[in-house]
Amino acid sequence: MAIENVISRAIVQNFSTKFQENLIVDAAIVGGGPSGLVAAKYLADAGFRAAVFERKLAPGGGTWGGGMLFNEVVVQQDALGILDDFKIDYAEINDAPGYYTLDSVEMASGLIFGAMKAGAKIFNSVSVEDIVFKDRQVAGLVINWTPVERLAMHVDPLTVMAAAVLDGTGHPSEIMQLAINKAGVKLDTETGGILGEKPMWADKGEVSTVANTLEYYPGLFASGMAANNVRGGYRMGPIFGGMLMSGKKAAGLIAAKLSKP
Image 1 (tube, rainbow, N blue to C red):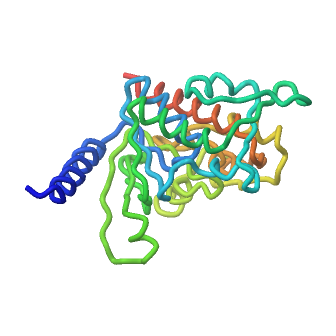
Image 2: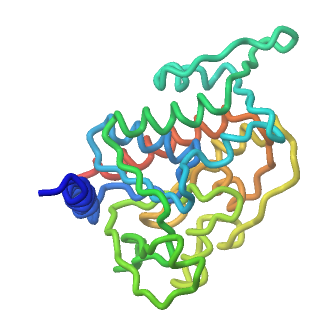
């Protein structure tokens, strides 16, 4: 067999196997940003099958560019244990005790590597166009290739079934919006809908990002900026400790739910 055929067959066969093994998962995570990747690692560490579906070619969310393309970001002391778990380096800011700076490229790549080495799977260039809704709970995702979505091609999607779905889509809270628009669900918020993100207030936003990481409807969770948008939290900019801690909290909430008899 020609080496060209060997290469092509290996790619098709191995991807097909990986994809089939993740058509039914414990946790389907939408968005490969920092909170989603952290959640994926800790869920995989706990023995759950976790798969991340990322619309863009490169997972990592808004981490790569740092602040305004200065590829550095900041975390606070409470999140250092998570960075240690991922083996990501950091350095304390001299005039701001308790706050640390780190390379955004190392952080993004480290989170991706750590999640995959824990056993989570990442499917990039995959968009979520709908949810699976059964027995009054969110039960999975409807997915298609991002190029198909962007070219508006008439190509039917496939489905991924999941015991839990985590909305890690960032500021738009796309999965929550789908649940409201398509299934008519009432979220666990003051209005039953999405309250909307408030303007920047970094320290308040860091706290609310974690506090707002919750199950908002049976089977549907939110983390990171998606959670802040749903419950009306403040924006925080290029400080990422709250995002990391949100991902870890989300993993704990999902693990606790899936572990119940």
